[in-house]
Image (cartoon, rainbow, N blue to C red; front, side, top):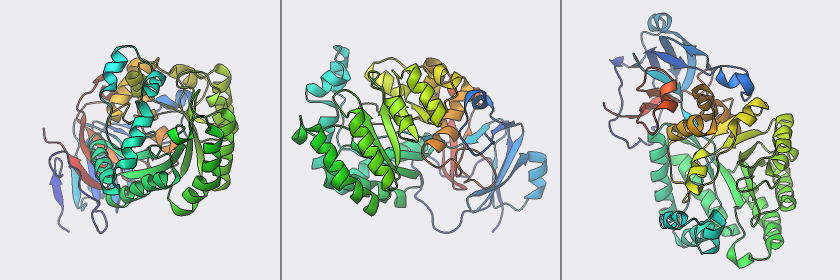
Length: 439
């Protein structure tokens, strides 16, 4: 194959290409003003480690068939791999790992823009749900939508996420809330896994809310999930996680323990929507049951945080959700100082419609109290561990997938500094340029 040397060789525009057939070309990235590797031990970063980005100036990276084979200085790699079939000249730019979005609700029908008017009137999340909005409304719309309709809308959202630099996405169900509909949502996610360049990590969230047909009978619905849903999910789908929304009016701690225990028995790792609107003991519960992560954590107690530290539970913080729900922001510094690994996610959903992890990193720095380096760590390597892929993605190291972004900024701090800025110029997934924005 003839070598193509270019500033960036890529399709123009913002619509990603589908996964191509055949092996990826050999790829050489040269002259990055900063190549942010995030290299380190095979575990999530915590405490002071979250500021250790392992940056190479005039950095370079070489990948073969979608896997990183060498990382170092440009002067060394330029001569060593002069026959690379594709070359990206990243002079004056910053190269980072692809974003990992550790918490999304990707598959649903409809939208809830009218709820902004209710929020302006001061209505809470729970009051909106009681008025006929919230999760219940989206469940109604989702149950009526066809499989193809759900797939088409979810794929468009995933396209937008990839255009914003997200190369790996955790995606929850939770808008079916019946065994057939939850399985249907998982089948949509499996179609996306096969057809889309981004990596999709499915999570079963049948315990997102009590469906209307089980109103006042939460224990019966939890029984249904344990007896019928979880065995089918484990046997028939590619779901890797089981999540439970532990909150007053949703699921109790006892119900969550039962669900997560059965999920673990069936081979699904646990996650918990914890302490979003009140201190319901979700952080401590997640730690006690061995969940991989506890998410939201706005009202997590000191005791809950301490237990997360002891058990190595990852805190997935969701500042865009706090913004959308008009609630306080999680106290990220408490988690960092207590030694809890912090990750980030968009919480993309009908309630929190943002596909941009760059925006979330900015919010983390401006509202959660993370430094730019900590926010970048939380959006990449720690998020990768939160979705079970920390040994495959999230850092630019030999043996990992060549998932990376070229940012049109001179150093990594601009990612958090430019609130809502258009900083992602080029997206590389598995060693292929899948998207490039022209200047």
